[in-house]
Length: 232
Image (cartoon, rainbow, N blue to C red; front, side):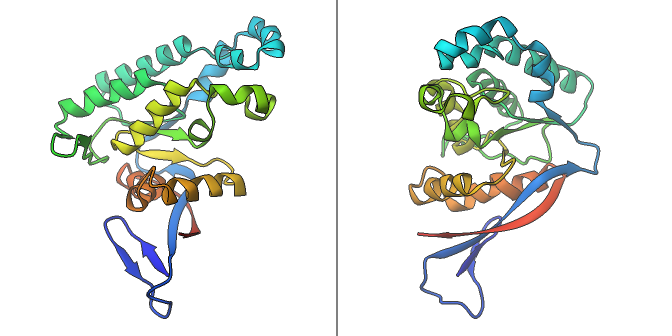
């Protein structure tokens, strides 16, 4: 068995060197004791709930995305972002869902000289930026086309967005812009999804555990540490 660390993978003493099992640590219930304010977009977006849209959702479940509209979400995000910069305040925003949010972060991280042309990705020291973000695992697992079959099983706030937004969030992770993945309740279904991401190399093992633990430590966040084994 091999254990994944921030920048290395080592074999665990007393286990089979040649097995295909990896041991990871991840955080749940993140918190901050170092002046970083954790902001949950769902708490702010709930006040913008479009009640009138709920009747349309009964016939067209994909319209649920408009119950908490992208326009309202990006307005809230932009205000949080600009306030943090102007007041020199360190914040971590949880549950981003939009390409526009990712682009705003990319532009900010380029200004901080974190863009690496040789890998076409960002190499961010997350202790530096005033604004960092996490996405929820549900916004990776699901997309707008899943509303028809799943309906109220995936009626979250902020909601599942269309396929293009799902791809943007994935890209934000693989380009090292999105710092973390919020697991919420880490059910067997979510664990299987994480395994599939690693096995299918959608997210490489070392980077997956940066977004589940080590990036969060750079931001000065911590939480309850759990372990997960993944077999290839």
